[in-house]
View 1 (cartoon, helix red, strand yellow):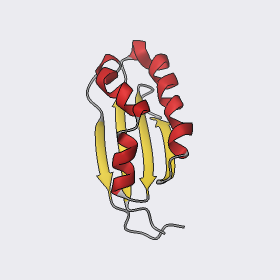
View 2 (cartoon, one colour):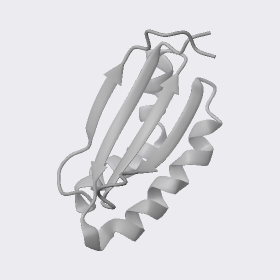
View 3 (cartoon, rainbow, N blue to C red):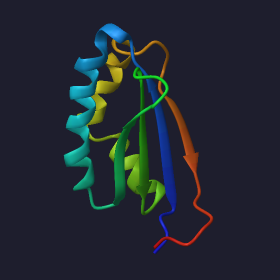
View 4 (cartoon, helix red, strand yellow):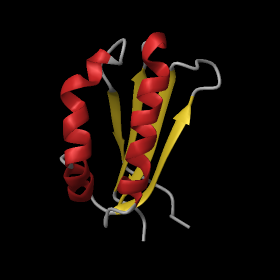
Length: 101
């Protein structure tokens, strides 16, 4: 089954907040991967910019992704995100066009 929804989220972290935010973001991975609609969920760091974190996520449906974004873990982080970031989270929602292996 091909995931219906992909999200790529870019987080530009304040250098002095990097380690603190990295710990928070790593804490999202395990619980998110256990969510029913999660196909895969990965945290990355840019090879060119150590202060750019990127989430790459695939979800069964957009509804599953929307439910994920409303989870208490993320909902508690969202109001404080700009304490850690140089600009707001950039989210790109995508539709996969190739077959899912």
